[in-house]
Length: 119
Image (cartoon, rainbow, N blue to C red; front, side, top):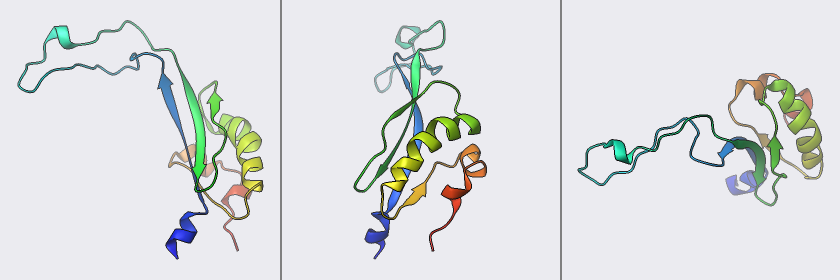
């Protein structure tokens, strides 16, 4: 029974993709037993160029991968993702359980049509 229910779920999330390793993290490579040497540390001078993408996957389908041009606050989430992408995608499915990540901006500001539970 649970397998039939999982077939209805659509999972969504966003992620930042950096074009280089300059995402604010310090990386170093060493062999087991080696000390952390300065020669192993990758240094960088500024923020990395990259893009923010959003997408969703279901058992039989997927949403388009959307590039997000700005910070994904609740206003941009509704105007750039929910209204133009999610609503048309969900309308094309017979039955669906829409799952977002746990970001507060997604749940508290999500339009009422997406928060209604199925009968």
